[in-house]
Amino acid sequence: MSLIVALLLVSVVFLIAMVILIVTAAASVMGREQPLKQYEPTCGGCHYIVKDLEARTCEICGAEFTNVGINMPPAQMLSTNAAIWAAFRQVSLVPISIWTAIVGFIAVLVIVPVGERFWPFSSHLESRIDIRPKSGGWDTLSISGVHDRHARGRMQQDYPTSLKKEIQLELKTPTGRSTLTADFLKPTLTYTDPAGNTITKIVVPTSGYIADFMRAAGIHTKQAAHESPYISELFTKATETPEPSPEDGSTPTDTSSSDSPLDVYNINITGGHWQQATSLAGVGAPAVGGLWLVGVVAIFIKQHGRRRTMRERLLNPPTNDVDWQPPEEPFVAPNETGPASSPEPRLAPKADPGKGPNNSKAA
Image 1: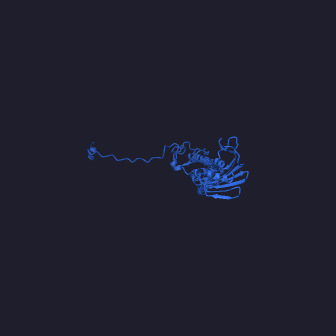
Image 2: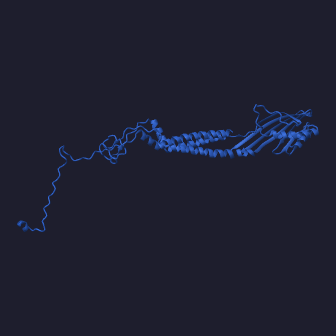
Image 3: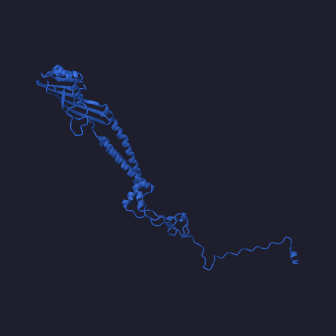
């Protein structure tokens, strides 16, 4: 559960960072931020204010803007900090936003499969169950269990590897104390009788061998055969993960059926839940954060020149002043309509082909 919560926290942090960076980057790219305040543009020839920027010529001097240009005045002076932030938004914000999104997806695509399939989990369970017979014949029987398990990833927790699974019985009778130790993995069964004799068997402990142990401790054969199956069931309970405790916080003390010859008066089971030897979130979060930081530093270093150029342009915006003089026109006196025109040449009259020179004189 702690791994899931940690992964959710990391995912939420990256999601918030991605949203903030992407929205800010989109606002910068799409020009949705408040524009910088500017003064009136002027003509590059006469320096009068240009009211219609779509016009082709200046209404004052008549010059074509394609020749003289329009002087866009410098924007309102920015502070150094404002220029640095503006340069960062325009140059580095989009790459950092994209890198943040990439790192977030890498974190999800890598950490989740690692936790599901490869990350080591361990479980340690200790238990103690105390019982006594309802009909007498012996005093008490204490069952102590230890169960250590190992799993690679959460997928293997349903069929883990047992590293240690042992049960110890301590039987108190009026004549003395006997102990039985069972190792379920080897498997071996070792017990001592009241006389101190040690008996070892390479078997899995079953109700039949528990009955032999009870008979060796001096319990009547019939009683041992009747009670051993119920004791064998408690073996399994002593090595299993306990059920959730009641809502009132009390510990169940008697889970035996009404026809059981045994009285279970104490059950104490601790552990048994899966834990990480090393927190995946504790390793993954710094690794992902370090990867993100390395990428951000690389972007900052690579784009340092572009940000500096942009910052200088914002602090010292260029102007488009053009030295231009109107073309000289010929001088025109106040009472003249224009310069004197040259006289037009007169053409000689053409001769009539029907009349010769003599005919003209005769006429």
